[in-house]
Image 1 (cartoon, rainbow over the protein chains, first blue to last red):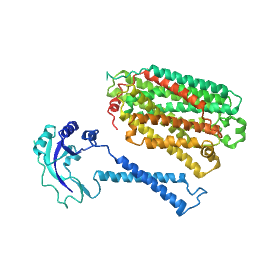
Image 2 (cartoon, one colour; image 1 turned 120 degrees about the vertical axis):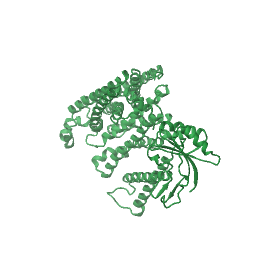
Image 3 (cartoon, rainbow over the protein chains, first blue to last red; image 1 turned 90 degrees about the horizontal axis):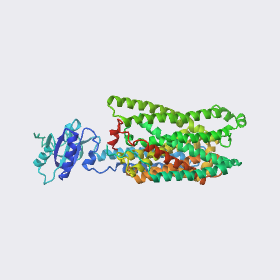
Length: 196
Length: 409
């Protein structure tokens, strides 16, 4: 729950966005995030985002599921409550493999969804600040995080000269919070000011 | 586009190597034929013809899997294959050649009435056997010969039509209208091949050629299992040729993105192979009916135990653990290693499927198997490189080419 100062630049064209992202990065500014109406191929590379570790997490969840199933069933059928089923051995591995497989998939799937929601800060009863409402419609919204040294006017001019059709400066929550907009002290004090 | 190296020239070294491999293989083949194939000892005969059978069937199905890959990606309107599509096309030109070899071997077995290989060829035994009698509508020499002829002829013919159509994309640029027409024609031809493929590799042919060795035993899973085995080996073969050509400086437009997709096929179908392996095994293990468990008796508990589980390690555990990571599928060295391993693993799989039934007590894996394997590898290298050199490596006017160039995973 930390409020920060952001400069927001809006682009109406994918083709203008890519060079702008590159220039902003080479100029040394820190891009908080870029909000787009649809998934843009190659934008993650342009922004310099590292490859996700979600699949590694998925592997660990999957292994957890496999070992949970195996240890649970083998304990039940050999120690806790051994049953003679069709004369098969108590440790009947082939019969357990479908269940081990199912639990692997279940753990991996549920675990990855929850991890994904956590990383993206999404979820029920949770809110995040919207930098521009039209990011869900037709605008590509680049958000730059300001430091003490950042000259906001310079930065906004820089964005405009690189094809931004709209820029503004906002002080906003950077992360998520539990609640609704109207119940919270919302950071609306800096209303958007349109340049040009 | 002008600066691309689209004309493959077969390097002299490759020619020498392929001739050398074929030469060594031929020596093994002829020596085996004299000492075993035409010997008076039945065991030796069965050993030789069985070995020849599984090798020729394996390589025919592997090469045919390339055409299946082309057909299926065409039907799915997948664009990414275009930059390297000439490689599966070149591999599939082997189907008639290996098909004729397979045909000759199978016909020899049928017409020499070798009932030690196909028990159902023994008319007297069939007459006394209610199970074989019930199957005699399917398992009889006439149907076998007709269906085998049709199968190999139609694989070759339908595949040739698909390759022929794609040659048109070399010649003239297409506009929207002619391009759409071209895609539609390709789709129809691919659909015809896929339907015939499903009727043969997907169902009847593995039952007829390989499963009928255990004349009393049956498994509906068997054909799918055989198909996946050959398909995953076929994708590995495509990967090997892609990497070879990349190393030689060809296929500039094919990148790690395409390799990643081929790697995904290798990974996914290895898992699918295991799924079928396990489904077939578990149902039989669970039901525990003697007439079904007989197939696994000498494989799980007898002489073939080592090979049977080696098979599972090479074809399941290795691809699962090694190819799982994204970076592994984009790594040329690792994909090369895994492709060789997978082709070898599925060759061993075919070995145990055929020889595990023909020579139940003894594992026969030896010089003859590797000699014939070398013979087929040499033939494969020679004919595929010739086919690659006969056409440009990229059909430059194909409507999906651009989609393939900018392909990103």
